[in-house]
Amino acid sequence: MDMLRRSMVKSVGAGGVLAAALAAGLLKPTRVLAAEEWNRAAFDAKEASAALKGIGASNTADSKDILLKAPDIAENGAVVPVEVVSNIPNTISIAVLSLKNPLPLAAAFDYSNGAMPELQVRVRLAETTQVKAVVKTADGKFYSAQKEVKVTVGGCGG
Amino acid sequence: MADPMKIRAKLTGDVAEIKVMMSHAMENGQRKDSAGNTIPHHFIQQIWVEVGGKTVIQGQTGTSVSRNPVFGFKVKGAKAGDKVVIKWRDNKGETRSDEAVVA
Image 1: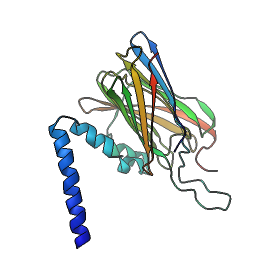
Image 2: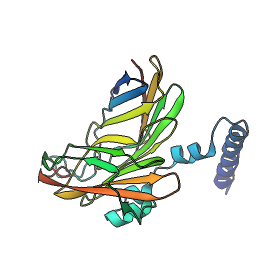
Image 3: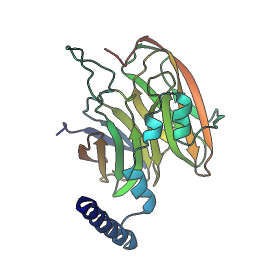
């Protein structure tokens, strides 16, 4: 009981500090949330459909305005370079998934203050799979592009 | 503490091309050691990139990102001399922050 009371006193104290920081304009609420919370539901999802749902992208429209560069054949699935460039206006986020990996979602990035909607990342591919790039725009719409990468030696076990 | 990141920030016009290599095992929890025990997850979950004092990119990553992650970004409106600060935080709560200057 006393433990509970202590932790409540502590959390109220921490909340107070945060509220003061917010009031002083030191922290923007959106930043605080994004910075504190790793999207466990999306990154722990074992199916691509669940991972997409986890980032809010259950419905994506195919778009030719997303350039997705990845090798046709990856001899080593442990290190596969992927590049995404979004030419869709008002792109605010880019995510990369390897659809057949045990945990498909590789990365999700948010862009602001002049950051161009481009991402270069190196991913692991467990087996031959579609790599999917998902783009989110400021109005909350999702677009995607896919490319198959043939994998000679998988990059997840060993 | 993890080894320092290697950060390069090259200016072309008003666009800074930023490349970063992070030193991290990115253990995906699928591998086994020589005794057959599963090596636990240990991977970077969050990344922040600041240019000239403003946060421009915030990212989240999972275990499908390769060991010793390499990322490339482009930031418009950068100037020579702007400070680039990149931070990461992993699933054990370890963090690392390194800096470079746009040149």
